[in-house]
Length: 220
Length: 256
Image 1 (cartoon, chains in turn green, orange):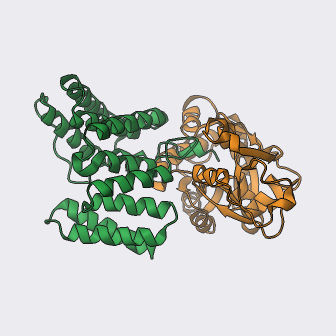
Image 2: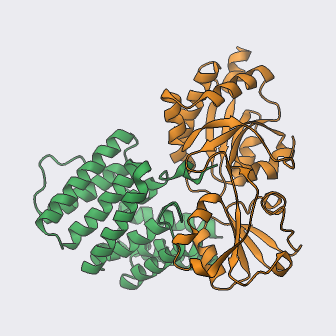
Image 3: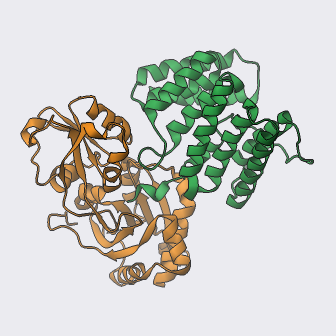
């Protein structure tokens, strides 16, 4: 069977990896016009896409995110929020258009690299964390950019930049598991759990705890 | 009533170990394919469900269920499990950019392997590593491996090739798509293709344990061989298939 059978099918796990799933906010009523508002709109698009099952609706959300990212970059081409948002928008496009996922993911990684160069600490080391998740979950060579070794490097960088952020530790745990370091993965999941427990109550915290527990159960 | 019940229980199991994709994501595509196949073959509408499993064990579990009447599997899976599961070939997939057949390539570090005997103690990594019979007796039928060679499955082909280039006692068995892309790697000069397999089927649709009556199997076979246009073409394209050709398996292929 062709590897291409499922090329792009796991984009659902990549497109929304900038943040943990939360209830879908309603679409904005007025077009955003500042860098902050446009970045927030892209974040909202990402969350809406997480909760959308209809492929046409996902494509519309991805298009909206891309428009917002382009508007943001037109305002401030070097702003990390815009570069990062452009990366996330490419991820949503990859999810919405699986047959062009390779092109979109490549663009996504480029945008994340530019965001990292602008401010590696943005969104709690988001550029490195999201890069790690894309490299972990995208199809591997030669069909896509997936590369577990490179993902591990990116995840270690995210943890080095923001060691107590649970999502970074979860990305590291996933990378360690995928590269065959089960013991390291267990340790990272455990650290992620501890870090999440130390966070204030929130839906993100619940999601991190759930993912840590699932990872620990799997890594046993 | 019994006919309806029987029809509703028929399932086509897609199983692709080692390849990317999750069951939930693949479901709409395999559903579309099953609907198109049923429509083309004149089977009652809704009489064939489809399910996707990306793992060997998951696929085997599904194929052991009585409702699993057909399977769409890579040829290595067929070689490994055809006898045990009584799989009878129906048609061979014609895969976009690959075709109905492909050659597999065994790759090692340049200068490290001088012949089969020098692979003692090696590990062969491959997306088809879950099917050691396929690796030893189909892909490497002209390259008799020492008995202590280990064969392991991996989805991390790039990592495996890096291990080869680093000089570890590892060789990698690549499918045609992977082998064609070797030259794009920055360390391609460190790698050498030791041997290529004969042309082998890429993937086939099989009847499981004679669970489809002969007449219905024939109708489906004829319909699959004609698929390729209109809505059926869309269903094929979504799975990166051009169509199907009559199954022509190697002489040494297992029989049900």
